[in-house]
Image (cartoon, rainbow, N blue to C red; front, side, top):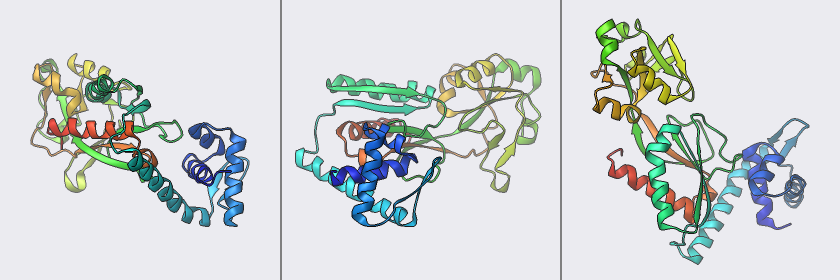
Length: 297
């Protein structure tokens, strides 16, 4: 079996945690994925994985070899890209995922411009307010908001957003305006589920940065949370880009502006070996330019 393919299979199995997941990512059969790792182990003379009926885990030798294998694949991809020309036309299918509202407001315009400029390009755009496993789902680039967990994927920061506490004029007229965090947490609170915890609000207040809350209303949709806040149901903790328009139009009012909230970074997350692909590179560059122009950097 091709030596490069065995390395790609090894990395994919390590990333997905299964031969089936690796086969799905590489678009090969599971038996071929199994044979590829076995061929690599035989050539190296070491076992790279502990195998059981329920799980696959790297051996110490496999863990030590993983980053070397990644580097080999990445360097070869970069060499091929340089050989065919760094400005190759983006083409084929680009798989992107992003949070629903952020994707609609700030990613879709970038993708639309790319599709206009590159007729050979198509896009599969997945809008989800939850994080998915990028490699296993075949995603080229994921837009993530918030601190990243430890990951073997590459990340490029393109900006940051800030939590914003808001309520409608009608709610504030009825229940009063909170003047401190202690007063705030006595009000009717609205929270969203997903990567941001509904039961904990974080402020940049030193040791008192994380406060446990008991929301009166939890919603799995940001749009629904905004509507609830505008309707006077309660006070919501949303992100700056989510409430930019309602604040401009006076449907919502920002509360406690003197508090310093903990900014949340916006990253583009992608597998190192995919970063050199023309479509992926073009998307990353266009997103970076878009947010630099908006002053989010």
